Image 1 (tube, one colour):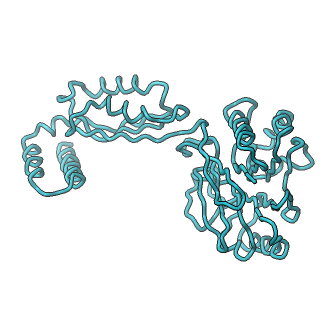
Image 2 (cartoon, helix red, strand yellow):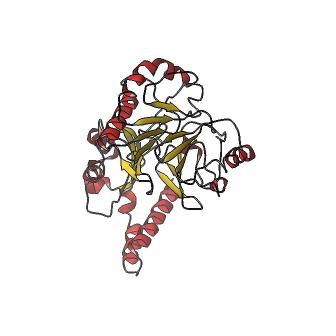
Image 3 (tube, rainbow, N blue to C red):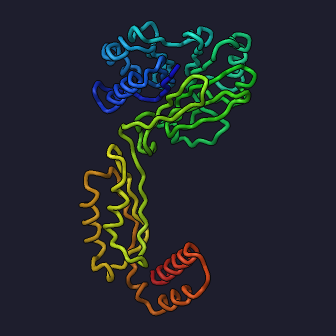
Length: 352
């Protein structure tokens, strides 16, 4: 049996990119012949979005060849009470009321404002309820404390902890999978003691600029490990270009090469570091900046131009003497570059 697991779509408007991403996920589910489509929280960005979009949600959440199982997340925790979302939809709002389908049992652990001992006690209350003859799956929306995540990995959530758990909380519970939501940044899998898996799918579309890289879902066969599935959806990509005046290269061609291989749905966050020798490339900083902007036009959402023209230092006799001596020393290229950078910065400070 195949399951498609995703989370944190944060729907806002009909037919925007997030909506189209959900349509793509439904299409993938049909193509891959899944039996269950799981959303581990935050299908909607806010309750009002759920209210406005519910008539349209019913259309794409009906007449499928699979069931759609949802839990509320911290953004849409009040969106599901006594609401109809489609004939194929099961909303799990109570931990003690699982959804059973053939040889699997899915338990919903929707977001609540609680911590530590209370969460552990809720999980332990299920100890005798997990059927050893079935595959037991928990849907969970919150933070895994065993791994360090920065605040940015969870979207714009501030400093509050969101229903934090530890892998040890699931010990001895006969759980095969914890399919989690709330961690936006990327696909992440952890082993549970006893052989199960704790897996974050990551968001299927970049919600903020901090969520970089091609997006993924967890599309797996029950009984086998979680499996990442690459998506053709909008996302952000961080590209860092370091210009080196000691290499025989054209800065513009270097930049073109770096951004040329980026996924077509990616919006680039570009940082250009390093140094140029304007005398060597026959181009001053203002002209180079102008041409860089032409090269990246329509491809970048942010540009951080941090490079500097150091032709006066490179032509300095003292620096030339330093480079000549450095070339004669048996250092790695990386070590030589580090020492060149130190010398450049020292000479720049001396001239300031």
